[in-house]
Length: 113
Figure 1 (cartoon, one colour):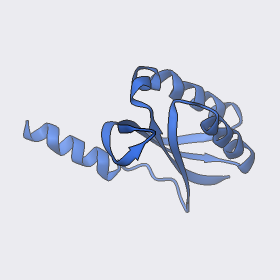
Figure 2 (cartoon, rainbow, N blue to C red; figure 1 turned 90 degrees about the horizontal axis):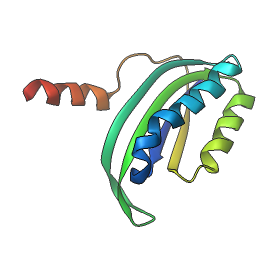
Figure 3 (spheres, helix red, strand yellow; figure 1 turned 135 degrees about the horizontal axis):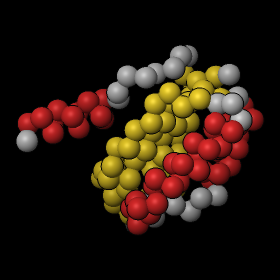
């Protein structure tokens, strides 16, 4: 099995359903023997450019380990889910379990407040 980093940009109107959406994808991954090494919810962020006249979106990131068949199934689900504006799947050499830069910055901002 290979390691992947998946980043999703979700429509801001669907932010309330992010939890159930992630549970659905976790279920798909775990059902076929895959593993989730890290899952992060980056929250709402401004987009670099508008997508479908939307200027803010909800960002999610997962590091998973799965086979190609499961990855194809996930990608298929991402494409036909209207709530997902964009998805990015990157192949990684190993599992990454440390917090991403986005989460480290978020923790620093909380510490300053």
